[in-house]
Image (cartoon, rainbow, N blue to C red; front, side, top):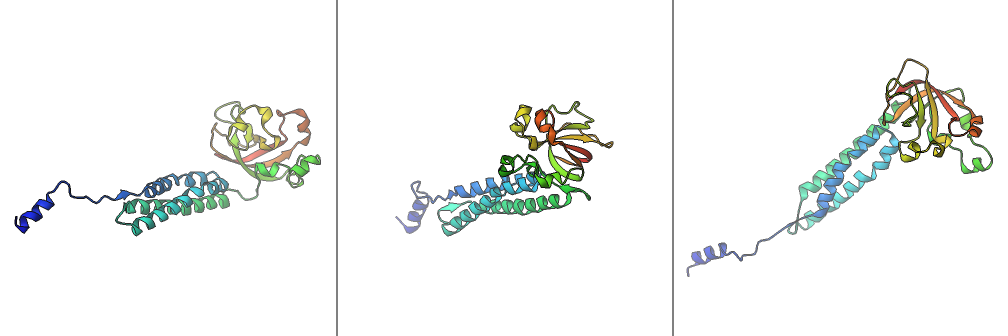
Length: 239
C-alpha cells in the first residue's frame, strides 16, 4: 500500500479518535447570574437598602465567571465556553455598577426640600426602651408636628376606593405580615395617611414616597390596632 493510500485510509477511518472539549458548567452559571443581576436595577428604584441586598447576585456572577474564564484558558484543550464566561462577567459588572449607582442617585434625590427622611424602623423603639415603657423613641417625639418623608405600601383594604384615594394605611412592606390580620401589624409598622391637598392616588402594590406633617397619638396604644399611633397629614405623594 502506498503512503498516499495509507494516509487516505487513516483520514477516513471511522475509529479515528475525535478530541472533544466540554462546555464549562461555570461559564453557564456565570451567564445565568449575569442575566439575573438585572434585578438590582429593579430593586434600586424601590430603595437603596433593597438594592444593596441584591448585590450578592452580581458579585457571585463576577466571581464564578472569572474562575470559569481562568479555568477555560488554562485548560483550553479540555474546556470551551470562554465567550459565555466573558458575557456573564460583563453583565454582572454592568448591573452591579449601574444598579448601585442608580440606587444611590434615587436615594439622594427622592426627598423633597424641607422634609426629613425617616423609615418605619425609625419609629420602632429598642428592646431596652420597650422594657422601660417607652413606646415612641424620644427622637421620634421630636418630629411631632414636623415635615417628614417616608416610604411604604398601601395596606390592601385600608383605602375606601380603588382610585382617587386620599386616605389609607401606609405599612412597612408588602409582605404577608402587613397584609394579614390588622391586629398582628405592629403599631410602629403602620401609619394612617390623610392627603391634605388635591393629590390623589390609585390603589397599587408599588412603593409610595410620602411626605407631610407627622402627628403622634401615643394614647392610641391603649385603644387597639384600629387606632394608629402615627398619622401623616400628607402634602407630597409619589407612586
